Image (cartoon, rainbow, N blue to C red; front, side, top):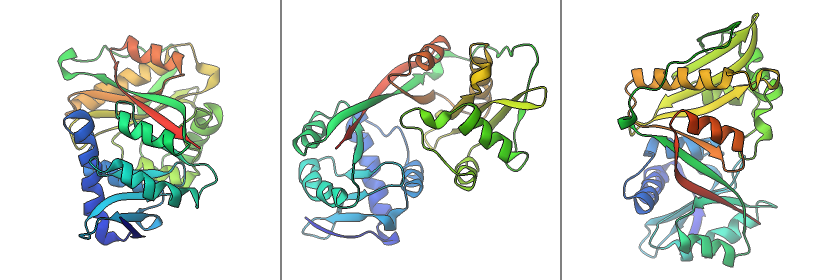
Length: 282
């Protein structure tokens, strides 16, 4: 293996590796090349990392330090050798490296541990299958008004709701974003809803239909002063129903394994644990 800086010319090969990882883990990809590309771009872009090349010049792996967490994508048939090459490169560029992997990939887990990384936390991918039918109707508490949101309507207030009033980034795995970074991420979503009480933003939900047809909730945030009143559940159901109307089949989202309250909410609307992701740090 040899390393060189990644360029835009490597994009198709790197994204294909990401899809191949998913197919090796699950029998079929759960996300598409577009979503893998968005993840890489969000973490600093392809040109922030390196590609690992086989003797024949083929791209077999990719790594980048990341803005929030490191990126590691590898040919599933050469994972050990790629970790040996790419992890030392990452460690030269980050004081602490955090890498996620599917919990069922025991070979990659063992390779991470061999290099001194330890299991720091887990998250779950949750699934409500299409066969479960329409989601229950949303019932908002008295005094709460909800409406579709268009980017630019009141971005500063929504941003403050998410990151200050709801302290969304205090949850492990949730990134703190400045308003321009947040706008960049939100502009690709289609199911955006804002809940208000007396004109004050108190709840937010954002989702989209993925390339594979799954409906995905990316953010659910409720002001701490409104928690326990049913706002979060109603917003979640409202957005899930909107995704179904938009053509989504299965419905999915991610949650930290230690977030028992959120897990209880999601299970109450029919979402079940599909996969565990483990984050290794060191």
